[in-house]
Amino acid sequence: MAYAKIPDSVIEAVLRHHDIVETVGKYVSLSKQGKYMKGLCPFHSEKTPSFTVTPEKQIFYCYGCGKGGNAIKFVEEIESYSFPEAVRIMAEDAGIPVTWTGNADSYDAAQSGERDKLIEAHELTSKLYHYLLMNTSHGQPALEYLRSRGVSDKQIDQFMIGYAPPEWDTLVRFLDKREFKAEAMEKGGLLIAKQDGSGYIDRFRDRIMFPIRNSEGKAIALAGRILGEGQPKYLNSPETMLFNKSRSLYNFHQSRAAMRKTRRAVLFEGYMDVIKAWTAGVTNGIATMGTSLTENHAMILQRNVDEVLICYDGDSAGQAAVFKTIPLLEKSGLRVLVAMLPKGMDPDEFIERKGAEAFIRETIERPVSVTKFKLIYAKKNHILLEEEGQKNYMLEAVAIIAELDSSTEREFYLKELSREFDISLESLKQDCFHHRQQHQKLKPQRDNNDNSWNNGRNEIRRTPSSPSVLPAYQVAERRLLARMLQDSETAQAVHDQLGEAFNVEDHAALAAYLYAYYAQGHDPDISRFIASLQDDRLERTAASILMMDDDFPFDEQLLAHYIMEIQKVPRFRGIEHKKEEMVQAERSGDVLLAARIASEIIALERQLKGQ
Image 1 (cartoon, rainbow, N blue to C red):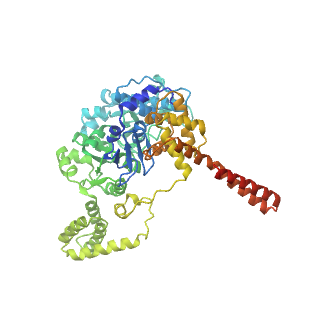
Image 2: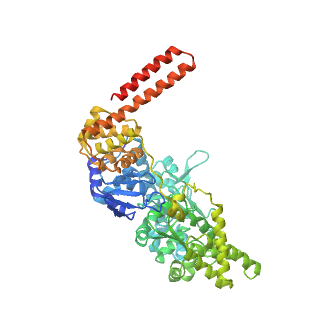
Image 3: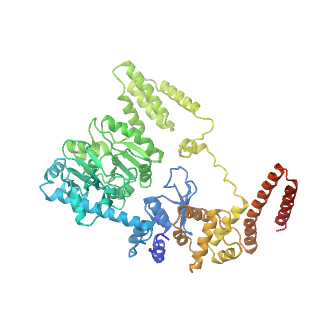
């Protein structure tokens, strides 16, 4: 096993300490339904809860996306950790000493060691740059610049802002002295190999440096803002084994507590916006890093908040970015609001010019809805002093309002439009109704959209599809495994009579693991067994099987019946194979061979009936 150096006793202790309901409940709002707890799945977007937690078995399972497992698996998935990372973090949280080391012969442990070394290098690099900013003459211009922008020394320390000097090899020499391999540091994004192959140079030079941290608060990348003129203005670390721009959010580790408490995140475009907003009291602010918001970002936010306030720059580029961001957030099931800044001003500049109180009062506390933002944005594209401009804006505005599902919301905005342009409400309603009719006509008769489950309108009218009926042998295999997972005597009886002769590959693999688990002297423990699998697919299969209703009666007679159903399958397949051989013999004109095969088929069929 790749993680054999993690003692079984530690995994057991972690699972005992971290109750599945409490662990999941930190991320998902659960409600009790009989012996289960249900909620909206944090791993995919849905409106009807299909995510189920079973306290008795200490497992979770989602009927929508198929993810399932124990508390460790949940933390792995929700935080994007590896198995050893999840165990270590959960052990530390439980006060369990972390004394094990990775298996040096395993790829996973080697990779984990490489990750740890890169994190150590990034932490030291961040501290070096911070020291150079705060304590050297080289960093004085950068420090004065930050202070002139209203960033206090306290915030510089809190965000570990630093300065990379203009020399080509400051970091090269620093890391070399601490015996970090230059090749690994280049792979990790801190250094760049010279084109002539003669050595390495620093990636960042003459820039104000912002460490980028993972959800644990460990440095995994860097971003540098140029001091003075030049391009690019911001330079980020490249993607590495530590850093993925589409999955990382700046300041997530510091803002997560505030986000979960308020159930709201404030989404900014840049590092300075986040830092300056923090000084103004916005402690739930985060930002993307050199990329637009992605579906992965949206899913991370959806696990932590119910609402996102977009606070992008007030220029045309910033407002266009808002338009692109809204549908991604809404698709993830998040409520979206938009902060309106003066034209051409970003949050950082607003705080600098008008102060923290004005920023909170005029932007954070007075956001507009998505519909209102679209109307404001549309209005900018028309000359309202001209009759033609007014008419075109109203037509576009009605089309925007028509997209709303709520009749109350539609009437609210139509009344506002009616008052603003002195147009009768009835005529606006008629146009709005016409737009909605046209929209319905354009939709296909049957909604085959893969994402229709995330459409509120569809959610009401759709009836759940009938679950697919499994073949008898698959039902028998799943029922047997469900019992075997909870009863070692049943597992031993199946081992003696059937062994690993399950017809479904994953079922055979689960049975083999289970036999080995009990052979090691373990008592039935579902959560512990799942932790021993170390295989995503098998963990999901086990969780799915365990979600079956296990109140059915079970005795030796039923055991024998299930085993017989399973053993029939290879015989049926053998008969089908014989039939194919007979057809081939007939086609080739070999009548005697075809007759002999037909006799064999009859004999096999009689054997089956005689069971």
